[in-house]
Length: 257
Image 1: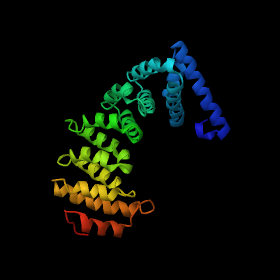
Image 2: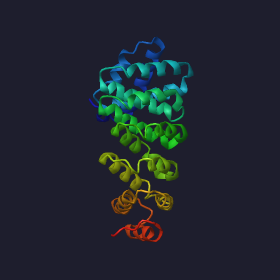
Image 3: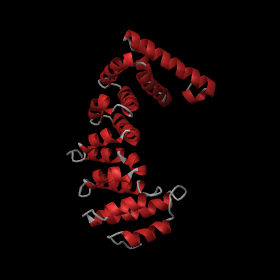
Image 4: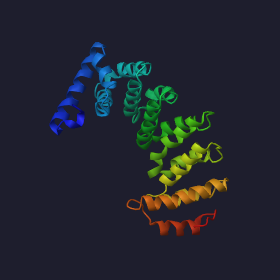
């Protein structure tokens, strides 16, 4: 029976049981059932496991070194689901203490399987939203990496912080303005669109884009911003027509609509 086949009370009981078992196994340093949770076929069981690790880390100080040791060890497991869940657990810790888990993201970024790499992106998003300074400093190290997928993943990973604070990530995005890889370029344009539609963000984004030198890239970004304001019209601060008019007035790069 899957996690969401259970009712609300049963799910709460299941989560409490997972927390209890992981806590007991941390005491004994015997991780048979913990490994089972981390490798479980049900995504939500794995999620309950990594959230439990986060809760235990912050509530039981004596277990903190054991947890970091365990997550580091799990990165060596053959099952990609275990590695993926370990990275997600590290992301819970990194919301507050990124330096403790930085090595896990250094390793996960180069995992051979896409799922752990996607867990890095997801974790960078959630960590960067609440703990931006160390996370963005870490991300900056990889923006000029020779591997195009690393550059693309980092660009994607910093997006969420930019939705509320575009000024924090625009200097990092600008480092990719001349990237020649189509996937990196398309991700960059996508992220610029995503950080421009919330209240107060379009002004910051357009002001920054006016300083970019790659005018062809800026044109694509401006078109994406206008398109995003239609696709996300239920959530955008301005209508598509309003944002098109704003761009026409304030952008140094002119586009045909």
